[in-house]
Image (cartoon, rainbow, N blue to C red):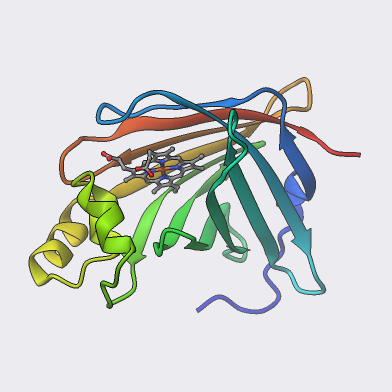
Length: 189
Ligand code: HEM
């Protein structure tokens, strides 16, 4: 277990609010390319833990698409970082990785989703047989697949110009690890 005195000062460069400079690029072999905007919020609230919230919207329609929030912890005396994440899609994830300089690389450590499969979520996932169908399914076969296959891998990197870059790749039961998102943010005053 991680002791409460975990320092997160090596992640200070993330703290604050960020907004996409220009729309990010979304892609996947099974999807039409799309463009999105996203704001990120990182705050430390009296504990050596960072709270975060990410909100992403369609760049053209402004419709809210993806949201995630959670906590960032570091293992004492190491550069090991954990993101504990809840997503609006129903996915709950622990991602772990390492901080090297101002580059944070994370990979799925654990995944979970709601046990109930109610409409309209089920309808939505029937459109595409993908990792989304896993989130909302209580089918045991699908649960088996989730343990074997779907992974998220992402990198946050502070650029020399002070901008923050995020690249996210994922694998599903149908696709090997492939890029899904790429976006650059600038810090809000
Ligand atoms: C589709 C996962 C973040 C926008 C998908 C699909 C998966 C997925 C599995 C379906 C792929 C397929 O049909 O083969 C994830 C995961 C995310 C994430 C695990 C974060 C860890 C985002 C973000 C956006 C986004 C930040 C920004 C807008 C979309 C869109 C689609 C999509 C527009 C296509 C429509 C849809 O199926 O809902 N995502 N996604 N995703 N994702 Fe993401």
